Length: 353
DNA sequence: TAGGCCATCTGGTCCT
DNA sequence: AGGACCAGATGGCCTA
Figure 1: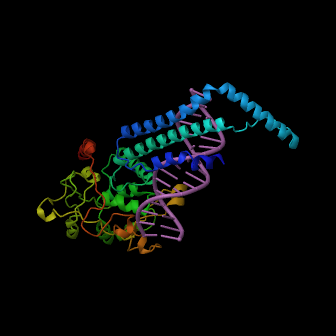
Figure 2: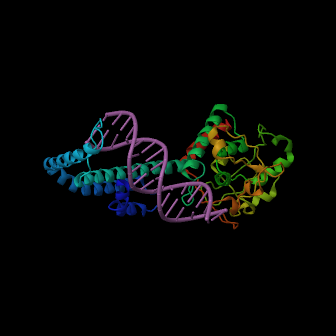
Figure 3: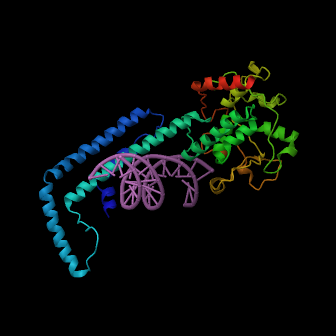
């Protein structure tokens, strides 16, 4: 009742005001704080007016309330047996007003809190491997990817070995939804045809959920990590792929070890990631969460798959929620994190020692 | 149109 | 008492 009253009356403009905020989480947190503080202040001043008024004549108010309460209890006593515990005070006009103000303040705080949370989440989006201002990962996917990323990096540090690209991508994509998997794989410039080719070569290695993914180390390479167009990076024998330039943070991990594709021959614009058909047999985390929410996995076409082709790891428009086109446009404006370059250099040094 | 994602409101609970 | 945190409810927007 009260809820309805609030939502339908005075809070509505407030709600609409906040609802109309642009959903630009790349905005500075400070801006948001200012905004939130402002909103809080607005609510506060609005509230304090009525509150101070209320507080001012609180004595008289209470008297009035008590009178009303007594009237109410008398009425109630006639009908119902006495109840223990604190009396439920009757909502007077002033009390409702105070309650309303309290609720408004609480709402403003809650909004503020959620904005802070979103800001933090946005910061997290910026440091996981796949970041775009235009197409943000959902909250849950951001958290999952972050978890996987931490895990992957930990594994690298723990093992002290140069990681396998496929395993790395697998780890990152564990438990992610199909679109996000596509996105991440695309961001990491994992070209599907690599898998297909590799699969043809080592098909026997991909059977079963516990298959090893120790593929040949790919010679990924990117000459312009900071640019929107990256150089080709493919397996040496896969010339067809060289026209598709991909780069990703991971590549810098591997260093510039491939043949020189920096020539104009490979200076093609980024193509949309290709289709990975085939069963990846990704050994999913067996956590209930994964089982319950996501049954996604990468698929190789060469292996029996219970899923329709639409569920295969497609980088086409069908696999994306939005923004992927068949043109040679980068569907996802990739950002290589300059501020992370030192980290990759360190890792590079680590792996080349 | 269904489903996913999100922002917001709201009441409950816990803590200071 | 008031604030932080949480989870459920709700409605809007977008996409397949």
